[in-house]
Image (cartoon, rainbow, N blue to C red; front, side, top):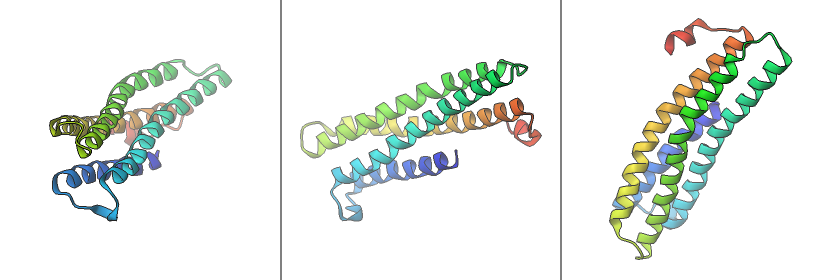
Length: 162
């Protein structure tokens, strides 16, 4: 989970670098714009994939814990599924918008698309990055609370934050 937060921060920095590099032609790190975009996109997509797989993994762990401890309430598994339903749509939309943005940026650089398409996808990606990050943070907190409640290690400070 901590690695996810670090990578989300790096993804946000990368998203800002793409915008700054496009609008101000900074020539960062002495590599071409397309190479920099591809490097940032690998980090960005790996981050979003890691976030989704974190919730898949914890959902499986919750289900296994309930199977091993039959007296455990099944509401924890249902709550885990609710969290995934809240998390996945904005995360997938963000990933798809980011990929579209990188494609349009590359097409603009090689003069195959109009710059407006990059502007539209960049602004949309930035909006969804902020929205998705807020939702991901909330889901991390809720998921941690589920695990703490399920295992009996409830931390009342975390509950009051929700």
